[in-house]
Image (cartoon, rainbow, N blue to C red; front, top):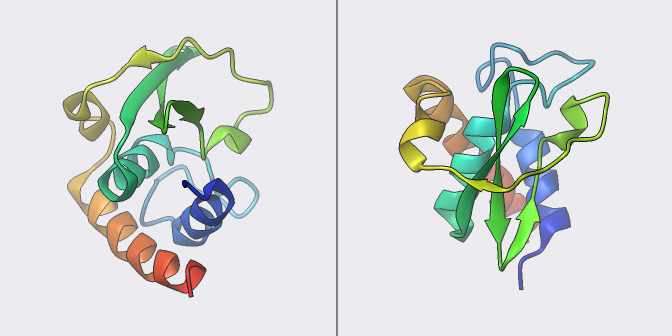
Length: 116
């Protein structure tokens, strides 16, 4: 069973200015969608999804047949999800290798702590 609350907690503790250039104390989820979706898929499988928000794609996950957007709190207005399929390549193109590596390392540590 996927424990979304534990995943969300570990994800939130993993975000930093090193995982997104848009990160702020006031909005730590800002710009974290692509790197978060990739790391969640790495650890829990599932599909990558996308939805247009304004002029940009917003990326998130599908786990156990359910849409899971761990970065939705970055938006002021509710997201109107279309659940379009996303490729790993296009999600990777929306982040940097350095951000992905930092998020991966931080998530591994925070996930271990979450499941203790």
